[in-house]
Each structure stands twice: as structure tokens, then as C-alpha cells.
Length: 385
Ligand SMILES: [Zn+2]
Ligand SMILES: [Zn+2]
Image (tube, rainbow, N blue to C red; front, side, top):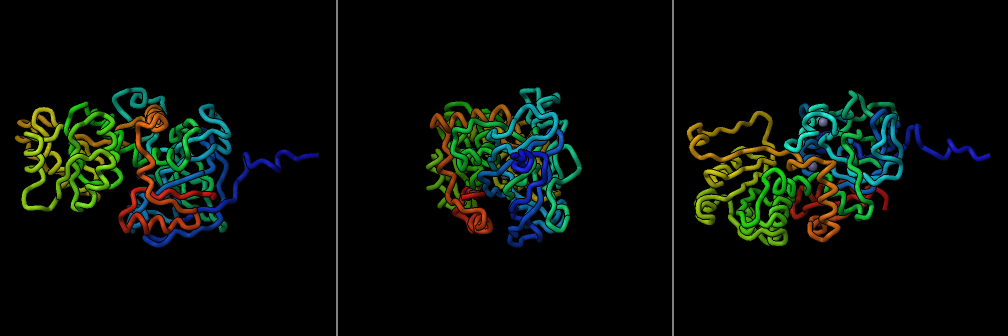
């Protein structure tokens, strides 16, 4: 007689390969690990593709807390539900899902409000654990706990993700493209679309033309901005930027201050400015570059712990500008990511152009080299190809 239980992994630990970070800045080690079954309100996912985002690098290099080892990095991914824990009706085995680091519980005041994407039931944090339990689902073959990263940990053939961090998507999209909506591209596009609400005909200045900055340009282009100014220290970024709608370029570090140049180019300041690097001084420059009265500056980067902004209170009062920060570009994962995917399928939103490299899982450390070397926007890592 056929033993059904023996053929299914449901409810059982899974032994699979993962790329484990064991020491700061050292290559990840591909080793066999044990992935526990999902607990209540969790799902276990078979990862199809993952890609490397700059936050993985930041935490991989970090020597002091909140760094913690060993850890499985990776938070930009797509996968298929292998099994679900108790009390899960939102997704079922076989569903295509995008894990997203920002929780969206759908029940709290903030998740129910159109005005926020910051869940208060599960506030965003860089935790080493699962979203709703102070525990890990990963152990190595010696029984040692391996920590989670950004509630996703996708550098593993299987991972466990909370329902609050999962968005079910239309399986029609190619996985290597849809995976980009899990973090970076959504953050940039969302910043223009939701955080800033860029209108047709407006002017935009983007500080830092890395993949997030280019995604902001793509979002601004989709919103109908007519002047999209890229600011970067590297003039080669302008050529890449043109593919994503950047119309003008300002080289940072020249004699004239960037804000002075942008004010001249826009007749008083850009309508919307975006800081995509994570430098307090650039936030000041972006704020100074936006138009008095209605200019809005959106901060997407994060500077070192403890760094502060300083603005003159008279300037804040008299200039009437807004300054906001936006995690995940202000997008509500479960409601907005499917819309972005639809726009990609309808050939409006560009995703293919962000993929500059693709590697197999065994070569995951190459993705780190490529991103560190520059000239790489997104390197997609195929788990099983
Ligand atoms: Zn990311
Ligand atoms: Zn919530």
C-alpha cells in the first residue's frame, strides 16, 4: 500500500541547501540545513528566484549588533507555497507568492487605513526571528539555530514566512522578473507613485542613480513627470538613467551646489526630490533643491545609526516644504504589488531592464562581487536551474 505521508513533506522538517552567512563580510557557505514546518499563520515556501539587494550587503558586512550570526540573508524573492501552518486561509499549497519584508497584517488601524503602510501589530524591525514569534525555523546539521533576516531569508531552497509578509500574485509573470517587485523596484516606483504622488507635468530630482533611484525615475515616468533630473557623482549613470526616463543630469561634486543648479533648471526648485543613497547631507541637498510652497522630499536611504538631520526652524516655517520618509516606497504590499505586476504584464512598467546579471544558486557569492563592483543593478539568483 502507498504511504502518502512518506511522500509529502507537509508537517515535517525539510532538509535542503541554504547559503549561510557565518562571519561578517566573508563568502556565504552553501550547506545543508533543516527548515522546520510553519507555525500558525505561517507558510513554508520553495524559493524559485531571489535577488541581491543592497540591504543584504549592509547587514552582511556589519560587525556589531544588530548584526547576528549565523544568519540566512536574502529578502527579494519569489516562491511557491509548499505547506501552511494552522489558521491560514489566505494562501494554499502551490500558490505563487512574493515575500515582502514590510508586514501587512490587514487588521490593525494602520493596515486598514489608506494613509499608511506601517503595520502597528507587527512593526517593521530588523529582527533575527519570525514576524510573530521570537523563534527561528532554521537549524544547521549540528542543531545550532540560524537566524532570519528581514522576515524573509530567501537564500535557502525553502524558507518560512509569516502570512503578514506574503503577497499572493498571478503566476503568469516570469519569476525572475516578478521577484524584483519584492523590494527594490517596488520601493523606487512606489516612492514616486504613492509616497510623493507625482503628477503629470511635474519635475523630479533623484539623488543617487543606483537601482532604487532608477526605479524612482521609472515610477516618475509612469506618473507623467516631464523633467526627471538624475544626480550622481558618476556621469556614466546618465546613460543608464535615460533608459528609465531620466531626462537631465547633474553631476554632484562640481563647483556649483547641486541645489543651485536644480533651482536654475526648474525655475525655482523641483516639485519632488528623492534621496536614494542614505546620506544625511544629501537629504539636506534634496530638501534645498525642492520648490518652496509645495516641494516634497522623500527619503528612501538610511544613514549610519545615530546620524541626524539639522534644518533651520525658520527655513522649515518659511519654505513650506514637506519632508517624508517612506519604507517600501509607501506601498501597501498586499494591495499595491499586484497592481505593479499587472502594469508590468500590460507592458507599462519596465522590469527586464533592471536585470543585469543572472547566476545559479551555487554561484551566489558572485552576485555579491557583482553588486560590490558596480555596473550591476539586479543579479537574479536561480535556486534550481
Ligand atoms: Zn531590499
Ligand atoms: Zn497591521
